[in-house]
Length: 371
Image 1 (spheres, one colour):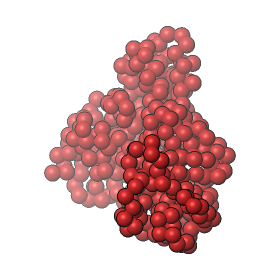
Image 2: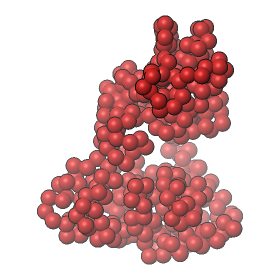
Image 3: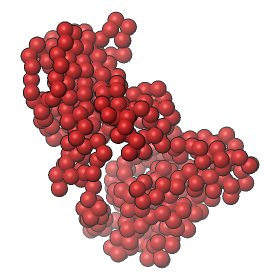
Image 4: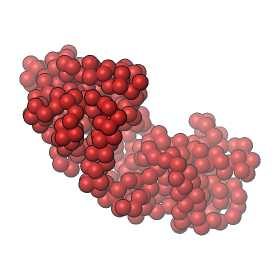
């Protein structure tokens, strides 16, 4: 299947092209950047407008074979000399038309910032700085990323529910869009589990992804990158692990994914099920929270926000004891005695939220097997 390139890659390429034309004085029709994945991205530059003190151009988003709602959109970057009052650095990155703004805490960027995530910001800064060094430009440059039609297209994403308003997000951690073929993902999970098993591991450590890697390193001394990545397919991963003969499995993940398991949801993709707030509210009710707390939780847009309600009411301990109990119940129900599945749930903002009885022992065993 054909790979694509992220909105972050497109923004970085457009910014580099605009900076090159602004400082070099020559129009260009193609540009190449390095992606964090190590692959080169060479693309056509479109809709260039050269002014006296600015250049604006675009790169068209190419999603490959991934069903991405931003596929085909033009990602623009306008580059101009930084103003005297703009002192954030050599490369000042702003969001323009069609780029969302963060309105809720707990996301990659702080409240009030443009929804241009950390890695795309690093990519833009790196590529524009290279051009500045090439032309011995000592001053700063201002880069404004915009996506005409982004606000309308964002309505087809989860941005409004996450607290990102007014447009799409500029995202990507590798710069590359991998096609999301379900069977390809499942095949990859099976291969990964088989490799771990063949290396003699007795515990299959599984995580939906690397979200929370810093927490796992700091709190448990475990590199989450070593875990088998199950994406949204928690139930099928349990089946695979059991089928390969694993007697122990440890599921580690962020509350935003794993809260769904407390409701028996074994495919956590938002397109399959998204009842995070309902499950968080149910836990509050079952834990004796006062009237009205459930309604407050149902108004939340993120699990981090719901946890803040738990803390406000002083019921977080009871709520997460209940949530972990329900998670364990449904993990055991899926495993059907074929394997013992334990679980660790955390939040980037609040740290460890809960763990089942033998989870830490399983993790210690897995860490010992790594040596």
